[in-house]
Image 1: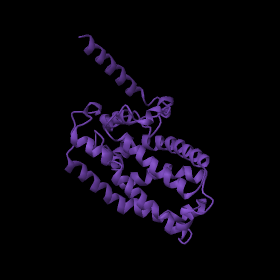
Image 2 (image 1 turned 90 degrees about the vertical axis):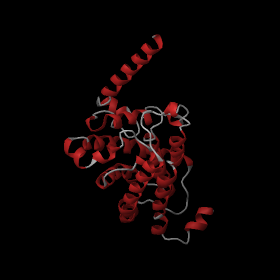
Image 3 (image 1 turned 180 degrees about the horizontal axis):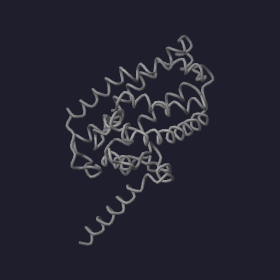
Image 4 (image 1 turned 90 degrees about the horizontal axis):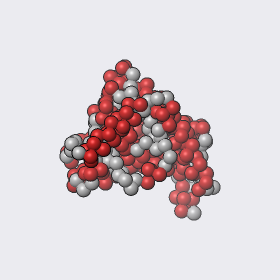
Amino acid sequence: MVWFNYSATKSHFYVYCHTILLLFLVFSLAPLPLVVVELTGWFNQYKIQPKVKYSFSDMFRCYKDVMKLFILVVGTLQIVSYPSIQMIGIRSGLPLPSCLEIVSQIVVYFLIEDYFNYWIHRLLHCKWGYEKIHRIHHEYTSPIGYASPYAHWAEILILGIPTFLGPVITPGHILTYWLWIALRQIEAIETHSGYDFPWTLTKWIPFYGGAEYHDYHHHVGGQSQSNFASVFTYCDYIYGTDKGYRIYKKLLHHQQVNDILN
């Protein structure tokens, strides 16, 4: 009833434009707890690269750069893409989707996005792709939450394709679409957090990569041919692009055992 009262008198385009506000709020607010954690040092024991410290000015500068791209690229892209939203049939009226419909579609969206993002990300690590486009994202060798969408404008456009593929293949309600967009961005912020918190709920998700997994990719930098996955790890395992990471984990484990014994 609340949704009907709000959306009934609004055009479909007006309702869709709320996507821009949603993304702005996610980009601005979701990383804030990580800013507090970084500045206070409360959870330094969980920081993946403890030698790297970011000041408030460092993180605010990153946020300003992200917002510039948000205004020029992300916001514009959302408006321009509206005809495609109409074409694929994403609806905004009643009936509202059931919980089963929402969950099943978002699972499909994550699987589709993850697979195609893997190959695009891997392609961006070829010599031309990295030097011309992807190196900007890797300026943060120790990721922070606000650096999740920090990238070349072309990369934002390119990686928007796999994000949109799921809704294209299995279109649903605009509420499902918004939840998908929000969850995908929050997940990306988590994997760029720089902290491996043991209580993170995503640790219970099978084949989920997480912050520690993706942090290795950033730490190695431009030479990295490992851990291309955006969400899950199965593509890296199947195609052998996690070998360097697995060797690193074994060496790290042996070192920790030796430190304990000595």
